[in-house]
Image (cartoon, rainbow, N blue to C red; front, side):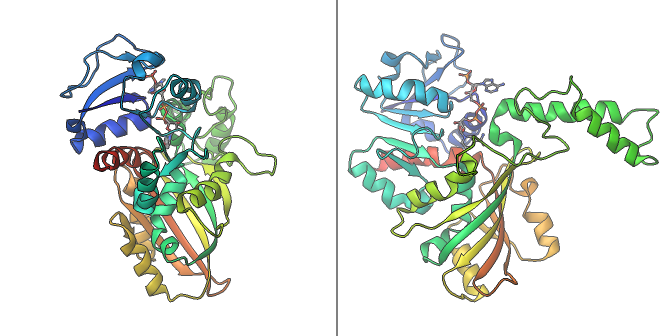
Length: 370
Ligand code: NAP
């Protein structure tokens, strides 16, 4: 049995990964060792057959090196600290990672097997060992538009995103709740009549968002009752790093012969879970709408085509609908007034499932099939 080391199981992605692996009986194929950066020596909290009962030290290279496969969702700082030292120490196992650190390295393959299973398999044949999940928003967009990418119908895309608080991690998700509580505790209480003086309530909420006690250690700004139109670091060309990832990663996943430009604005919103995106797709030629819909819906079993009407859109094109599910709803599909080759679409997907945990656990099976 292959020895599988799991790091980062306590975080947002890690918890979802554990749920999915348990549900799919993935652990039955491995001898599993759980690692921690903060709880080494404590009892492994899971009841999983063939697992080491004690949490191992995620920074102990000699112990990590004994694994055949490392699956980490601990984050980029951990990857930066450990990956090169581990390889330098002679580790020749597989490294499967949710963090972006290694994604654009030549030796790493971005994994999204419904789109690039052939690429993953040839990387394995070429003895590549580093496999990295794509950026959550990019993976969700690619699954949603898989049929259009496959038929080489896309000239360029703009993507305007609405990304959930949980995309930034467990602490940020807790902070969103804390911010909401901070405001509602002070506004919804006896003696304040919200219905009769709603503009005064709005002023009170605005003042509370800049109160020195307002909790914002992680986001740095209010995300509750607000939105934040910048995600990740600043690049010299005015893009955010999150915006840059769309074209860079999508074209790497597709191994594109002709680069497909993808650009837009990435925005953090106060949804708890699921990333949504509004897409403008420039088609290479005028394709009838029914053919476009067939291409999209037939590409993979997770896409759910949502009729372009108000009721279906409000019911199914929402974080509320997609949360906790592998479904990728795609809707608002229509030709834009800009011209017959300009397509509008809106899609939403669970960034912790297809955007993070699912490609990682599926990679384990691709390795087993090798
Ligand atoms: P996270 O929730 O912040 O968890 C990362 C680590 O933080 C945990 O493994 C845990 O490590 C530690 N931690 C500290 N305080 C915690 C708390 N209160 N609750 C849980 N864990 C806590 O990070 P994440 O969102 O899962 O992201 C992990 C990696 O996946 C990152 O590289 C991220 O960029 C990437 N990713 C995230 C998403 C997403 O939607 N969140 C999507 C795609 C990719 P110890 O147990 O060792 O202390």
